[in-house]
Length: 203
Figure 1 (tube, rainbow, N blue to C red):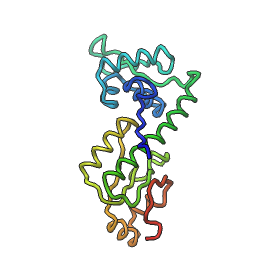
Figure 2: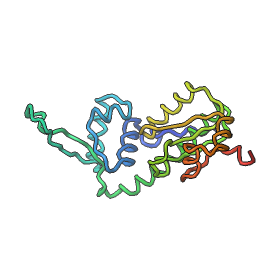
Figure 3: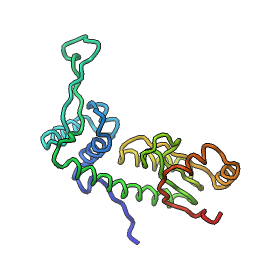
Figure 4: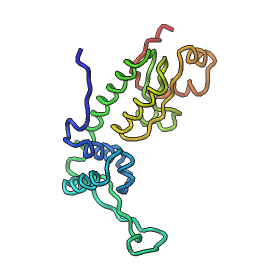
């Protein structure tokens, strides 16, 4: 079977442009300033500025100027922010496309975690199903080195891109906590979720 290794830059030609589009389209209510964007998508300042210019010219994003409370200098009076333009004619189509892209990225993540460990159960919940009150975004039950898992999740965060809360739990601990009706675990299991791996249906 051919290994799925989808990358955003394959479709959009530029990793920086792809990650900026993903961030803006998934966080349509938020506005970001340039240096904030460089940290969120792990890109060079000049590269971000260049792609912001491209996206502005395209019409996908727009500039916002926010007045500073402390007016120390003329340059500090206003800070330039960028936000997706929801009136852009292709906004809905691009947002829908990036939502589908997330499915491919999730499949990449599940495949890589499963290859690097012995996973019995894995679900996406929390922000992945618009349930921010759930205490985690990904529950992983099985055996995988913490350092390896953290590296995989960090790489995934740059593709998404936003911070992911995940929970890794050994199988025995999962079974014990489920038996004891552990509040944290039951909140996850009873919430909306997308089950990616389930080898425990008969356990």
